[in-house]
Amino acid sequence: MPLVDLTSAFDQDACGGELPTHISFSQLDLMIRCPEAWRQRYLVGTRGPATTALAVGSGVHAGIAAMYDLLRDKPTASKRALVDTAEEHAIHTIAGIETTRDADDPNPTTISLLNTYVEQRPTHIRPVETEKRIEVVVPDSDIPLIGYVDVEAEHQLVEVKTSSRKVSSPTGAWRVQAWLYQAAIPKPVEWHVLVKTKTPTLLVSAELAAPYDPVVTAKAIGLASATLERIQSLYAERGPDEEWPVDGVVHPWACSLCDARYACPVGAAA
Image (tube, rainbow, N blue to C red):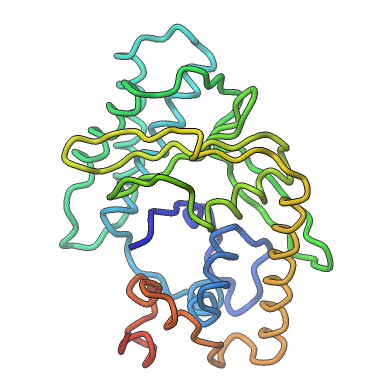
């Protein structure tokens, strides 16, 4: 099962069959996995209610962003103040998310993870801005790549992830996302992974980090460019109403997370 990716929370809704005005990293990731899933979400507008995991992840991100905003303005803020600020923003965010009716209450898990982050957070992070919007111009495309960096600090970028299991190294998707963000902000990237075990823990290590490398970043831009080219090519060939390739079936978990799986004979059978 994949780790929670919250970049889709900033995506625009389907544009009545029109191509989006911008592309996010989550759109690139979904397009690479399954063009038909991308068509369903961003052209047709097929999207189900959020899962408990996504609600928890959204709350955690909102809480940690508020915590770092407070630290930026008041570097000596107490742990109690950090926890209270984080919890307040997290609960407010979760209250605005529609989840499945049988979903578990996300608040207890979210609060537990936020307390863990405050207790175990790396103190070398000096926040400058949270949820910073970036825009990357992709060669040969009129559609910009837009993203939101969790935390820009003085000396690095920080991406926060939640996971149900321990993670020893960043996934390929995380790396590509980081490289694309580094195209706009050339700083090293750290991943802070909150593990949702019975006793939550925060994973931060040298292995969960990536230096800035302009050569690698250029390759990531090339991947984004090729993916955008495929979107535009399929749109020109098939339009928004004809089925696009169902590549998701070759991924072990892609179909199980697709909002359109029950309307897709391949996905429903997977």
